[in-house]
Image (cartoon, rainbow, N blue to C red):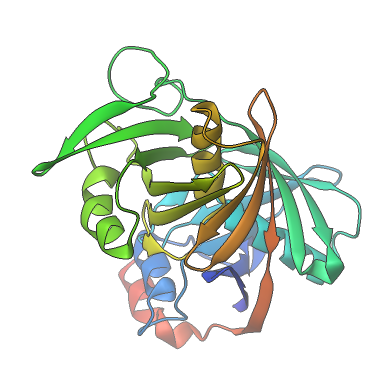
Length: 284
């Protein structure tokens, strides 16, 4: 099975063609392919599914734990670059369908920079979703273990919990992220960001990603965090998001439409040998 590897600020994905996958990518097979020691190793698999002629491109996003994500900003930028490298798109904007909605992409600088219109952010509890009465989830408190944190929740097609006024370090993300991801307040689990506002044009985040764990960078996390900071009046409409893997530019309109711009790097292409997963297929 052919694969293509890219990374977006250290967040690495494998792209595979759905038409070549003659069997369903089970949870166990997905986990094996993404495993850093027993497989190719990645933060997820982007599956390019066939779509009708004239329809938008169709993308499935699989997390390394085998679950399926609604949307991924870095994954979308990587998928856009892959389509460009395959000469399926050129310099004009094009659309991609995901479980989290349709987005518009634009590839620039020979593929090295990609802009994605991520859609509209919502803070409404029933859309994210967050348990409890219908409301905008802003500046609420949540207790995990012995610690109480203040947070906002948002969706850009997938759920996010943005922790405020908390030390933004890898250690904190690794300690609190797993607990917040599966907290009963979030029926579909959630991505978690630990936000630090640097000034009106810059924020920094540490990320615990649903189904993937500690992550160097995330496009949807950057979008949600910037939108929360903007909603709280802490930043202007154009924000640089600083992450361990690098920086993204997020533009937020007054009605909370999000445009994300950032780099993509091509790493490798090759073939996955079926020997690495044949024991799993024998169990199906």
